[in-house]
Amino acid sequence: MPALLSVLGLGSPRNQSAHYLSDTNPQILAEKVDMMGSAKISKAQKIALTILDTHEQLKKLPDYRPGEDINRLLGNLVRTCVQIHPPSVIRQILGFPGLQQMLPSLRTICSEAESCLENHWAQHTLSLANQGPDAVLNALQTDFPYFQNYVDLARLELSAIRAAMPPPSDTTNTNALKKITFIGSGPLPLTSWCLLDEIRQTCSSTENIPTITNIDMSPTAISVSSQLNAVLGPWGQGMEFLCGEAGSSCPSLADSDVVYVAALVGLSQEDKEDIFLNVVKTMKPGALLVIRSAWGLRTCLYPEVSVNTERLLEVLEPCAVVHPYTDVVNSVVVARVRE
Image (cartoon, rainbow, N blue to C red; front, side, top):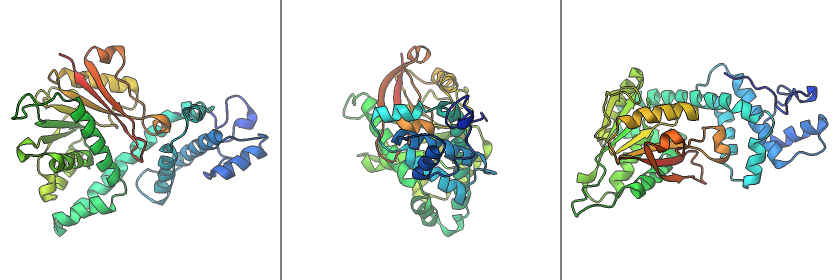
């Protein structure tokens, strides 16, 4: 995990103060910076210091499984990063000394924490199986802290997908979605469940309800998610689960109208490009690739992903990029596989 080189800057002894800045409250941080000789601290500096200090505290945790400390730190971090600021303030925050060097480490921690969160809730909800489908579904919809975010993101993504699809060629709606594949579905495939539920609610005919195939390279994730889906009753209908690696020839993506690549698949632009290229090779022309990205301060949590690179533009036609201004963290990118 990359080390944080400096909290306030490189090369100045006064600025080697990661451990000194131990409070996440911006006002306390401001007072401490003033004590270190800074005459004035701006709003952007307060936010940057908060993000840097949160990273330092996260690094000290023994693990990233859900608990009081990790929940508090990540909850505060997410709330900080979804705030809306003028572009000039965002540039100041992201350009703060030491912050860019720290981001790969922070994103890695966020990725590991998200995986731990999914594992925890998958096991928790599965433990309620003997109480019936309603109890399991209620645990997800009521108790899981980020359920509404998944619902809102699914609605956003479905709107972008439908906007990128060609209009129906005739009254039989032959261009309706028939199959969606989600790569990197993990042990708790909430995106697939919420997406399918949204399609059911907005589709005029049950004949136009697609199937969703969930793929993950982890046999454990597929085992847990398929067991959990089986106890969800009607809410889990229309889902399939397969163990496989992104871009491999098995399972095939040739019959998929839409292919999702999860945000946790690859942590850098280069890694993601390699994965996208392997995935697109197995997709049919005209199919849609859905990618999760980030913008503004949300790039502290997830990397911004571009499809406007030389390699990707050869095989993908960008269709839409949607940036949420709500509590939803991820942006959505939709691109069409070229003929």
